[in-house]
Image (tube, rainbow, N blue to C red; front, side):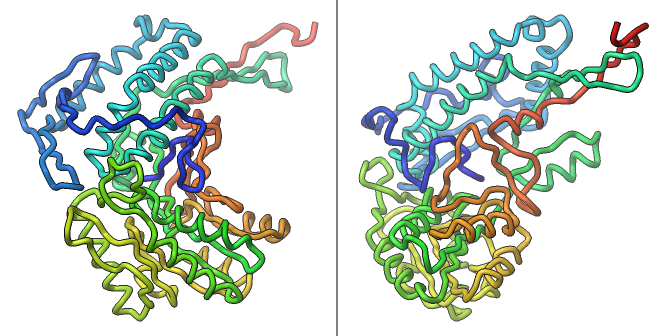
Length: 431
């Protein structure tokens, strides 16, 4: 899924953050149970699952495996808090905002521990976990804490002698199922029309025009596709380059890829760690092989690093065509397919040809061209001369099969509220 964290721009950390501390390499994982209603619980089934460090393939710990009875228990606790007259329901909006600020304070306090856990569990470089994920988490909590007492309805002028106004009321208990997609919506439609907000996949076009700042475009496209080991739904996984600058762009992109530091994610110099698990590792290598077989030119990489865990060399393909699997399927790995285009109308058609519509990027010095492309591209987000510029204040979400609804920003609030219209009869509306 997208790194919707409020602190990413061009795949680089926000350097306004505090200095990077040392990770806790020998961290003992103490909390492995299911947290429900302010208590740690064992799973109802008694089952556990192991989680492994993808850098070393060593087992980190075993975690309680939640299932339907555990979810039911959590929902019951949340529903009790939502009932009229409950202490939570009676808590005023300002106090609720303060609680979110307190949670942000706790995340900030334990930022090093949380970043270490993220690096151990996913292989994400500690540098990115600390400066991007945790920084974004803190900023997002504080942003929405500020909204707690600012969600307001409207008064509406009407025809008759009435006062009409709206209330924005919470929809109730919400659940987050982070690793699954449209099957959730299908299940919701079969049950009771639960509201579902989906942020799904992307095969995102990154369009580099001949008049672009090529240094900027090469760096942003590189970070855009290789950030988080390529495991990012916003990845710049279709780089369209205008033919006049195509060869130079490919040459510079290969230079960047060959220099990308790959290795121990706890090393501050590392920018690329291992893939998340064996299944994803195998899928990426299969897609790389498909690129070779289908006629794309392998410029660099193209294989695993055999001397360590689930690491794949940064890979660049040129001479890629729209019909190749690496140009159509979401790779979710460190693979950069570079395609050539002749003119703007052609690239708009090709960029919009897939079922996805999550993000797009445009690199050009021409404002008219940038605005034309921003309007024409069928994507929920369009970046101009930047990449992965995601902030807590700005909405994020997809068109077409990339999802529905929006996360982040004021627009996200609509996903969690119902609008109620209240109309009061008066003897005289304007006495």
